[in-house]
Length: 156
Image 1 (cartoon, helix red, strand yellow):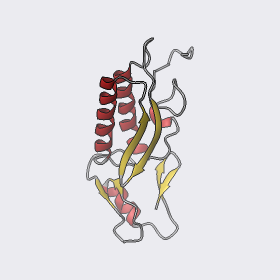
Image 2 (cartoon, helix red, strand yellow):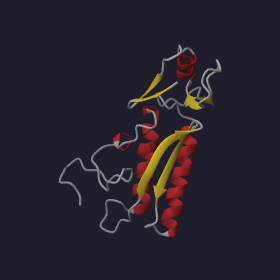
Image 3 (tube, rainbow, N blue to C red):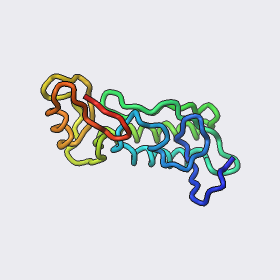
Image 4 (spheres, one colour):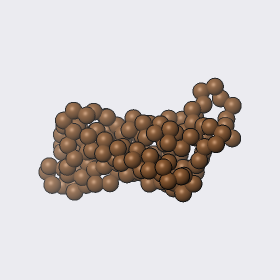
C-alpha cells in the first residue's frame, strides 16, 4: 500500500518495509557513515529502476543488511522474487556502489584524497575509507576517543 503523501517516493532500501517517505540513508542504516548516504540514495534509485518498485507490477527486494567491512560498503539483499535479469541488474548496482565506497570518505562524502587504511599510529587495526582530513583526525585521537561518522556511528 502506498501512503497518501504528496512527497511520496518509492524506496527499495528498507528494513522490513516496502514503502517509505524517507531518503534511503535514514532508513535504519546507521551502520555506515553519512558520507556514504548519496551512494545509498543512488543504489536505491538503481533498485527502483531494476525492479519496478512504485509500479503496480513491481517485484519485491528486501535489503537485509548494510554495513562497512574492511573499509568498504557491503549491501546484502533478498532478491528471490526477482527475475534473472532483474537480479543481475541489482547485483551490478550493488557492485558499483561497493566500488564507489572505496573512493568516497565515509564521514563527509569527499572523493578528494581518499584512502582506505588502518590508523597510522598502530593503535587501531580497523581499516576505514576516509579523506585526508578525517584520517588525520582519526590518527590524532587519544585513547578512549572515537571519531563520529554521523548517524550515531563512531569508530576508533
